[in-house]
Image (cartoon, rainbow, N blue to C red; front, side, top):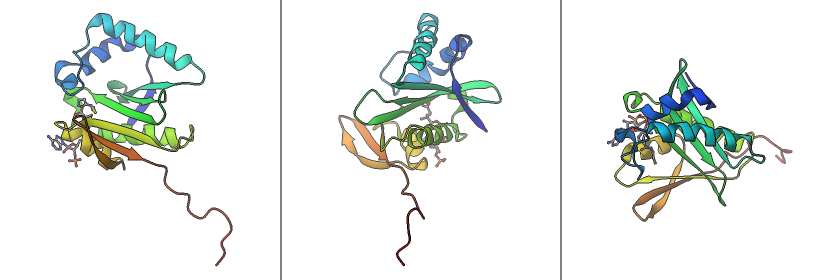
Length: 162
Ligand SMILES: CC(C)(COP(=O)(O)OP(=O)(O)OC[C@H]1O[C@@H](n2cnc3c(N)ncnc32)[C@H](O)[C@@H]1OP(=O)(O)O)[C@@H](O)C(=O)NCCC(=O)NCCS
C-alpha cells in the first residue's frame, strides 16, 4: 500500500536515488546531484507553505521507503500531473496508484474540473500509467503524447423525475 506524503529536509538522499540517470532519461533533464536535492527539499517546503498552493510535490512511500515523487501543478490554466519512480521500484503499480491518489486530491479536496498529463512518445510505460489511472488520450504535440481526465459524473444526485 502506497502513501503520499509531504517531503521534508530528511528526504534529500532519497530524491538523489529517485532522480537517477535511468529515471531522468525521459524527462529532458540531468540526474539530480546532492546540491540540487538539498535545494529541492527546501523549495518544495516553501511551495507547500503557499496559500493558495500552486504546486503539490508529494513523496510516494511504501513501508516508509520514499520511492518516488508525484506532482500536481496548478500554476497553469489546466492543472497537470507528473511523476517519477526510483528505477528499482518500477513495474509494481506504484506510479499508477500514486497518480490515482493525486487525481483524487485534485477532484475531491481541490474541486478541479480537469487534469492533464503528457509523456514523451518514446516513453510508453508512462502512457500505460495514465491509461490505467483513467486518463484519456487527447493527441500528440511536439513529440509528447497528451492526456486528460475529468471528474466522474455524480450518480444519483438530485431529484429523480422518473
Ligand atoms: C513511467 C514510470 C513512472 C512508471 O512507474 P511504474 O511504477 O513502473 O508504473 P506501473 O507499475 O504503475 O505501470 C507501468 C506499466 O507500464 C508498462 N510498461 C513498462 N515498460 C513498458 C514499455 N516499454 N512499453 C509499454 N509498456 C510498458 C508495465 O507493463 C505496466 O503496465 P501493466 O500494468 O499494464 O503491465 C517509471 O517508469 C518512471 O519513473 N520512469 C522515469 C520517469 C518518467 O518517465 N516519468 C514520467 C514522465 S512523463
